[in-house]
Image 1 (cartoon, rainbow, N blue to C red):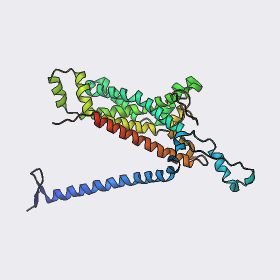
Image 2 (cartoon, helix red, strand yellow):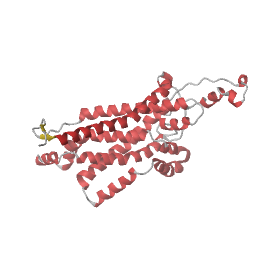
Image 3 (cartoon, rainbow, N blue to C red):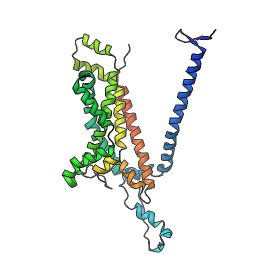
Image 4 (cartoon, rainbow, N blue to C red):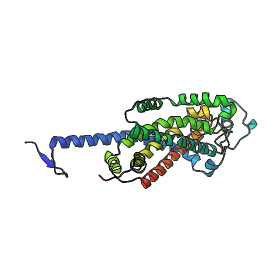
Length: 316
């Protein structure tokens, strides 16, 4: 006779079911550890190699140094057979403020361009379009855009925006156009999935009270799905902040801060790419990577706080 156990819900669990449940729990724990170990290794490496330049006031206030390569070569005169007395020593001030501001500016403009449009598109698809022809076409092209490589989007913006405007085309706004195009399909698909999870009972109750569909969507459906929508939007922002290829095509590169969205600028991702292979730029690359991770984490925490503050609780 099979042994059974009473669960908290009043049902009886067999021994085989208990074993499978514990086995599944162990497998989930192992999967979590497997996923967490690389993340911990990356974070420890970033902190170890980037903390030396990040935890200083100069990093957050000074322009990007342009004498890193010459200073690095000056420290290796014996390798190149150069007389050390003939080399002028240069002090390198590690600063990253222009790239920090450029990242915030470019990502903010991209978010303003893509997140509202993506939410409105998702509302149409889920609340109005249904399985109509227009909705199917939009979903198809959204899925296609999701799989487009970022470098292709950078080339597209370079062709239609930078080339016609020539020198004036490279700007933070051009970079935002490329990043916004990458963010848009993520926002649309994630928001649509969150809207599908809102119970139809809420819509029916609102309709029974005489509310039109648009008011039900704005006052009931969107607030109920706000935490999930925020998570999807932050996922899109995190991807945009770390993109390099579109930025290299569209934004240009500078070493001094540019407050305007127009004119050449730079981002943390661009600085990571340019300094990773530059002699003496390894410290800047690691510091920029750590700074980028920190900025994304801060933005995510802020978004979480906002969504929890304004979300509604649904009890069915």
